[in-house]
Image (cartoon, rainbow, N blue to C red; front, top):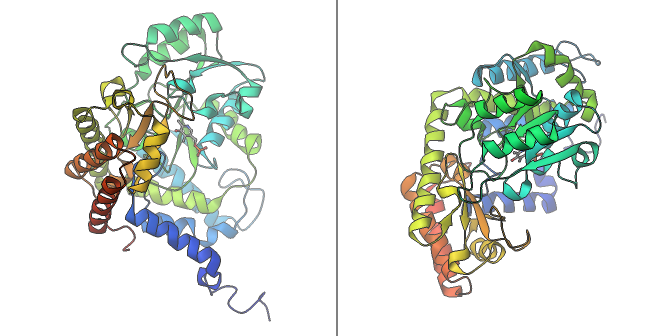
Length: 421
Ligand SMILES: *Cc1c(COP(=O)(O)O)cnc(C)c1O
């Protein structure tokens, strides 16, 4: 017999009941709960199929049409399709769609453009920056000298005068704009002017706003940044992974080599196929409507939570995510997140700017409309969700109240099925 055991090629996951049960449990959790965690979304069946396809069997190294291994004709076609779609979607000249993750895209760009010990000026994680921008616990934090900017204490927004002053003092080789918990628009032209003044590269990490950028609903970093990095699975509603975009061909060889062999080996072709599928979807007119719903949803959440006594950090949201400060209600993010999870509402605890509390028990919650909008929630549903959040955080120990919210959540999610569940 040519195969390992009967059914090797065809039996499917049902032949492994223990694993199948956990996957089925996860589908049920996604169906019956409301996902408000900003780093998540719900992909289409096409993206699921592409990521679960036979491309997982193919090993290639190097860029499309210049591979080390043979038999790459279809892998080349798929990667080329992903690149062409990415550059069309973001109106730029070059793309590398190979990064296994957003962190790898960032590390690859740093590796390609910087030398060991160069200074990177990036947003402080305590103010909303991402750990892959040089947090001391990461490889980037060890290999480069990191300088930090935050937000203004009053406005809770980035203060470009502070960034400019820091840039002049620290002389970075790279300035990074973009973060994981920054809800407002970013002045990319202003960042570029500062980068030019000190002779630094400007890298924009748009992981949380890529879908809005693609559809013109958030400031476009591509005309200003030397390089733009992103994940494809948050705002873009697509495959797990990352990518990098740029316009200057003089950077191409350095960025490509920074990603491979700089920080990665062979390509995850099933992931690249998933990215091709998601970029294709994002080029359709429906994707603009989806992003309008994301923005309207986040703003509805912000308005209603503020009406119910939570404080919205920086006064609102220009993208799909927002930060709510629980201090006025006298509880912390960890307690709130646990109570909300019992009610079927998935959120994450989060530091707020100048948070007097530690990361394990911070003052805030981070919320997002990405996944809700993907299953069809409109502003009305998000207002209702905000009311449920407020109901729970007002009385996190009230089991009867949490049970009532949980029942309402199940009722609403049954009306917005995912994957035909
Ligand atoms: C999520 C995120 C990343 C990292 O993505 P991974 O795929 O988890 O490595 C990078 N940058 C920003 C701004 C992010 O929000």
